[in-house]
Length: 71
Image 1 (cartoon, rainbow, N blue to C red):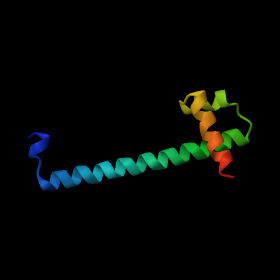
Image 2 (cartoon, one colour):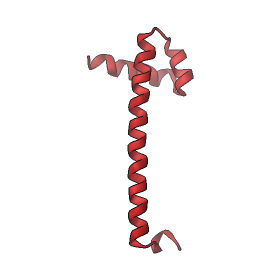
Image 3 (tube, helix red, strand yellow):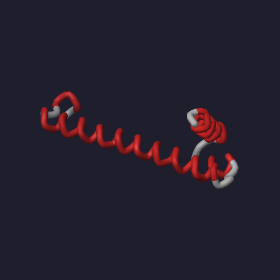
């Protein structure tokens, strides 16, 4: 069965599964942001945070600046 031939039930299940994955991704992003803020608060360097978070130094800097600007 191709993607165009799936039943309505299968389509509904796929949509629900996709919605769960999107929500899980949002939760993971929020958790990572909290962890970055905590590491920064504890004095970790941006290089250390980037290495552990699997992000670029620039991305960490942007996250920290974004948080600092909303205080």
